Image (cartoon, rainbow, N blue to C red; front, top):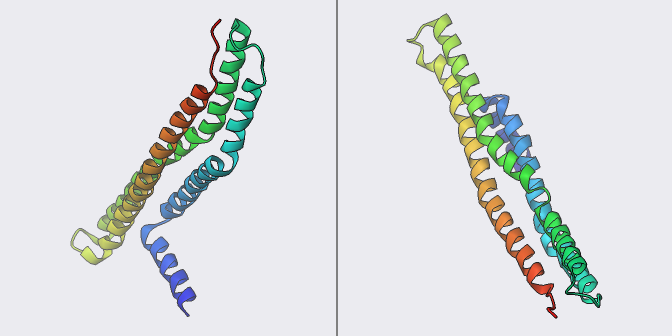
Amino acid sequence: MPELEAVGAVRDFLETGGDVLLYIGVTTLAMWTLILERFWYFRRIHPGEASRALKTWNGRRDRSSWNAHQIRRLLVSDVQTKLDKGLIMIKTLVALCPLLGLLGTVTGMIEVFDVMAIAGSGNARAMASGVQKATIPTMAGMVAALSGLMLSIQIERFARAEGERVADQLTIHHE
């Protein structure tokens, strides 16, 4: 049964890497959930929001007064705020992943030092478990952070460009 083998492999990986891997996994899951939500928002919800802002602006007769400028700024700001929603949390989770990996490194090295104190420095087999617990979370934290970093940069660029595009569509008439 391949499903049971996969579950066993994940369980073994988590045991080898230590408890910190679970925290890295939860953090990565939260980060990817937010990233996927942003892509869903950009594809499904944002076009309607941009259209609503454009319709509101084009429905106004006055598009040149100080008040009109303030309403335009409000519309653009509302669209940009919705585009940027969750981006700070994504960046925070991206930054947290390597820190959790570092925590795994520290806890793994503590285990190595405990083994050295009990069994002496000549027992390489006993120290190998701690070294694995030190390196696996570091790798997992870095892989999670790199994947999130690439996509968070793309999300940020898209949000900025899309906000500027909406702002450009809300034209001001000069009298």
